[in-house]
Amino acid sequence: MPIDDASTRLAEVREKIARAAHLAGRLPESVELIAITKTHDAAAIQPLIDAGQCVFGENRVQEAAAKWPGLREATAVALHLVGQLQSNKAEEAIGLFDAIHSVDRPSLVHALGKAMDKTGKRPVCFVQVNISDEPQKGGCAVADLAALLAEARAAELPVGGLMCVPPLEVEPAPYFALLAKLARDSGLAGLSMGMSGDYETAVAIGATHVRVGTALFGERA
Image (cartoon, rainbow, N blue to C red; front, side, top):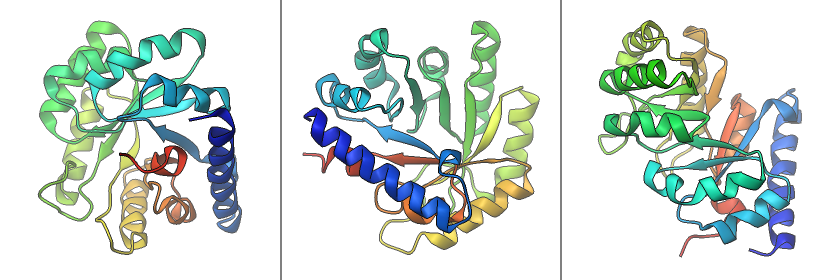
């Protein structure tokens, strides 16, 4: 992706975030844009770094491990894990990522807690909620959230907020509003919600982190 394309797309996304934030009476800088780079190689990512983007997200530990050490050598960027995490990859994930958005079960909580104690690194964690109770999606059930948060806090995970992925092709606002209420009720400030098709809606409802890929890179092949 040429630098001009990257700059233009990044500016458009940031402008839309700012507009949605202003309409909601929020400061644009209260929203963190995470550029999702899964399946994109270093050559596609570098122009976005050059254009000033400094927070990125990956779905898989293995893919991130293959391409990000080189990219991070020259630039201070933050890397977030936004995809499902296997418990046996917890220590590797903690070594690679500055934030983990997919904490969704007790076994993973315990694996992360153990790995954090061992390594001394404590990336911020978001508990993923299966907000629409879809069997194919990760995330804990709404009914199990309080118990999982209690386990995460007992394991001394730095829980920063909640994350969700609403169902496809339905109005996402009610799901975002439910996640925002769950976060408030749980005393959490962070809301990781909103992707390329609905991030403006998410910002209007209080998202603190939006996960945008297609709007920055174009449709995947």
